[in-house]
Structure formats: structure tokens, C-alpha cells
Image 1 (cartoon, rainbow, N blue to C red):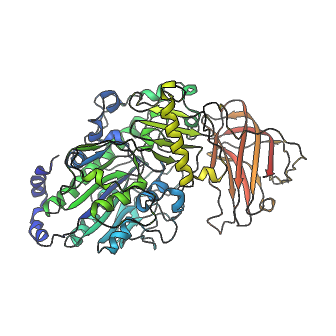
Image 2: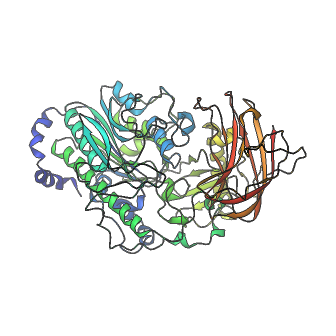
Image 3: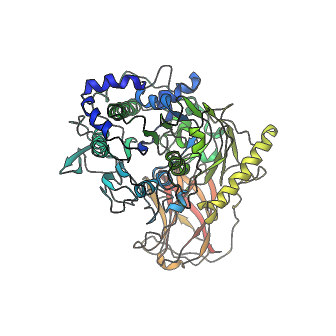
Length: 630
């Protein structure tokens, strides 16, 4: 929808009466409005679909789409980025990068639910120092485990954070004396369902947060403002209020092509983690579309307000997300992989005074680049020590198309892969497989590995060299924990696979916990119950020293593993010390037998404990476990 249509819409909603006063108090500095969603698949936005061939735009079947005219208008009246990625494709690390301009490990939040370090500068703190009214509304996910955690004490530059919610995806919120409260929730369990019965445009979370944002904008319209609205949808649980809950009930979603490829043809790093799926859940897909449609309608409310108040030309509007959602592609849902619909995010920006309408930017960026670039566009000073790029000139230049071969780095932090991407290719290296090089133009489905193709030798080398350089420059967590990524094509197995060691036996105590004397152990876990987190080994705290690296080798045999199971091995230290936690390290568990090798390190905290087991359910026998000091 074009801006010229907004005046008609504004009249219909009764907003135009406010315009005169707003014009009189219009701020001279550029305002900033960020509309941020959670787990948003870019294929659900019309402005991205119109840039794709039909087989990519309609991966769930011909004509299966949700119309998003309000979100699309931001792209049409401004710029669309076609290669914008999460710094790490899960919530907390990507969000931390987005506000600080640092890679996740530097923020203190490399995995979900880890709080950001105290005192970090953000784009909001810079703008606050420049005299801006700064506000944050919606999901935050950067203050640790607190849930919902309204109005965290640490504001990170957002002066008004009354409606900042640390964690959770509640579908109903109420406003009690200017403070939010959760409504409509059945007591939480892993499989909790969120009750949307009785939801309406006043209390459904997407609507509620948008209304609170409009109230703040109305309050601050006479001065320069920066407001970030972080909508928790379309992240699951998939539920939405009427009429969106039935709006797409007649849609039938076909399996995307990549769901039907043989498992053995997939990269090894794509086979583990969450259970592989072979069919789409029609209801879940229909509701996801409904959540997107509800978001689009609320984006329309915000754009109408700017137009009616004479602030559209002087306000930068950004629409983006923290990461994507595979939505069945590559046999998976949700996020966490380097595939496009997991790692790539929508990024749209409108600024009539400086950004030409219909601009397309094909340079590769990550969320690390956002603060420096947006501050540069606004003419504000950057964040000292930022690791991101200030590419403001690419956005404000008169060119309608910007294309740069820049290579940028994506980390998985706790997983066994890292990636480099530019506007054409993506390289993924891992502990478990040879490097995978995707040509995103020739093979947008990411099914073909071009790494061993002689025609791609130079491309592969260039991207590999740049990836390794950035991994070292930005302290890739895997390097610190001794992960051996496969850098060269002649390495067919993990570089850190070890052999058997001699030593005495470990003996189990009566509780089933295992004492350690740095030797071998026979462990049979066939009696363990199936569950999402199945612990099969626990080595007590007195066995490990601070500031020490240990090498672990486990030979195992399957006794009935569920499909998609993974090993987990974890170091957990003194529970009173939040820094005393080894990041989760996962290895795919598939087949009849195998050997797991890892390096784990402690810090200066005491009371370390080793926990090992499987995720996804099933039984296994750990035939031999060896843990040695390095």
C-alpha cells in the first residue's frame, strides 16, 4: 500500500484530528521506529516473494500466500535488503547483536537466556545521549531467565521500558495502572497451550503492544523519539485471535521440495537437532499465516499514525526480525540452522528524506551491522568498539540497486557449525562433515554442495580464508572450546576423532552416578526412560578442577534411538555463578554405533559437574567413556 492511501485510511480510523498539533511540534532530528518480529519466515512477505521466481515464492503450493500490504509498503517506499542475516539464528544472540553491534560471544549472550553483560552501549543509549526519548515495547530476551520479567532493571538506554517483557510468548496482556500483566495462560509446561479464547483487539498481545506503542508515540511526538516495538509473534505457540484464526483455514500447504529429499543426501549438521518431519501440520501453518496477517494490520496502524501526524517523512521505519523459521523446509521447523529460511531475516527500511523508494540492497549484512549503520543514517555518533559495519552510504546513495561481494560471518555459538555468506554463496563448515558451499543463485533450495567442484575452488578458498579470519577476529566460541572445524576438503571425518586409551575402570555408585579416575567405563543406559532430555551419565563435582581442559571420548551403540536424537555433553559449575556453564555441545546420534569426541573446559569457578545423555529420546549403550586432562 502506498503512502498516498494512508490519509484515506487515517480518516476512517479517526486519527487525522491529531495532525495539526503534531505538525506544530514536529521534531527536527530524525525519529526512529523499529518494528521487530520473532521467528519470521521472509517468504511470508509479499515484498520478498515478488523478487523470487514462482517456485521459490510459493514453496507451499501455487497461490499459498498471505498478503502483507502494509509491510510491503515499507519496501516499496524505501529499501529492501535481500541478504540480511541473524548473527546467530536463535533469539537471544541475534537480539544482543542487533542492539549492541557486537557478536554474541562479546555480549555475554551467545545462547538463549544468557543475560547481556552489564554496561554495554546500544544504539538506544547513543540516541538517549543525543536527546532522544527512547522506548522499548515487547519481547526483550536479554535479561537471563526471568519470565515474563516485565520492566527489567537494566534498561540499556531505553528510558521507558515499562512494557519490555524479557521472555515468553503469552497471547493475552492487560494494562493495570500503566503496568502490563499476563492473561489467558494455562499453567506452563513444555507443551503448554496458550488460551486465546476471549482475545480481542484490546488484549491480544500483538494488538496490545502496538496500542501501547501508539500511546508512547503520541506522548513523544513533539520531540525526537526512538521506539522499538518487538512483537513476539509469529514465534510459536501458533495461536491467534479471531478472525485471523480462521482466515486461512481453507489453505492446503504442500510439502516444500526440500522436505522430500533423502536424509542421506543432507549435510550431517542438518540431520541432527530437532526431529525431522515428513509432513506439514496444516493447522499450524494456517495459524502462522494468521499471525503474520495480524502483524501486518498492526504495522498499518503505526504507519497511518505517522502519516496522520505529519511525521512520515522525518521518521525512519525499520521492519525486521531476529531470525527465520524453516516451516518444513529441509525437514525441519523453527530455527538454529544456516539454511536461508532459518538464518536470513527480512530487513526493510523507509526514510523518505534520504532513502530512494524501491531501492534494493544485495550486500550481505548481519544483525551486528544494524547499530552502526542506523546511527550513521541518522547522523549520530557510532558505538565505540562496535564490531559491525557502518554502511549508511549504501542506503542513502541515489543508486536504486546496491550490490557488494562482502563476506560476513554467522555463528551458531553452541552448535557444531559456522558459516560465511555473501550475496551469492554460502559456506558452512562443521565438526561433522566436509565443508558445504551453496550457490544461492543456481541452487536456492540449498541442496547441492559445490565445494568440491573445480569451478568453485577459488570461491571456496576465498570464503574459507575470510571465514577463518573472522572466526579468529571475533572470538568464535567453538575455537575457544577446542572445536575442530573441517577447513579442508580432504578431511572426510571430524579432525578431532580420537582413539582408545588405556586406563583403569570407573565404578558406579549406588545412585547411578559415576566416579572418575581418568580411565575407561562400561555404561549401559538401556533402562533409561524416553524423554526430551534423557540423562545417561552424571560425573559429580569433586572430579573436575577449575581452569582445566578435558578430552572426552565415548564409544556407543544404539539400543533403539528415536529418529533425530542427539548426544549432549555439558559442564555445569557452581549454580550460584551464572558464568560457570559450558555451552551446550551437541552431536548427532544416528545409526548403530559411533564415537563421540569433545573437549570441555572449566573456568575459575568450583564445583564442576559433567552431564551426558541424549536429546530426542531413545536408549543407547555407552560402551566406553574416557575423560582425560589435556
